Amino acid sequence: MRTNLPITNHEIQLDGRHAIVSTTDTKGRINYVNPYFLEISGFELDELIGKAHNIVRHPCSGEGGGGGLYVGAQQAGPGPG
Image 1: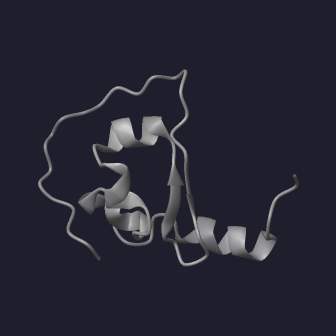
Image 2: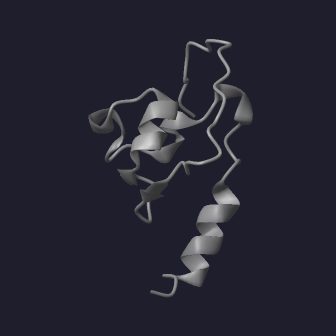
């Protein structure tokens, strides 16, 4: 697991009018993030594209947080449209 430090103890209030969006390939590497994702994450686009999505995980969340989502998405295949 990556060590995403330092923890800043700075909580960001999300704007409910915007969605935080990212997509990955089947290996979990980021291939798209929207501008709000960049704003909230504090990363630059070139720091994220092609990197493992867990680069943005909080260190206290553990390794298994989103694994079920990836498995479910892989089994379901592409969505409609």
